[in-house]
Length: 156
Image (tube, rainbow, N blue to C red; front, side, top):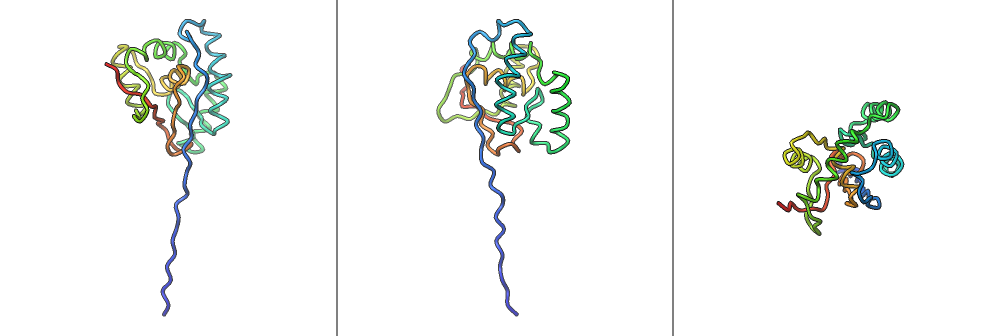
């Protein structure tokens, strides 16, 4: 009897990095202009990279049902709470500084910002604020990664 071995290689998912040009004073924009900017800049670049981002995080990580929920939210213009994005944008610099080698998870960052602001900052709203500040979001497992990380350190 001959025994053969078979090696199954797991599919390697390439990391995805998303960044946009920083938008100074985003927190001071009127809501309608802020919404337009988020959809035109952030949503479009995320979708190009197969990331379906809403206030809950990356819907692509949740499979078909996650993408369907994303599509509904997008159609209803409820992907994000723009006031919360602006709040996060206004407060990020109070807590964080850019770092070369540090990776902070967006879920941890949103909890820290929630504590600082004394108001709930959902993960996806934080991700948008960080992108608008000019930070890059790193989805380590590609579009299957729900929580991206950012190269930042806690300042305070």
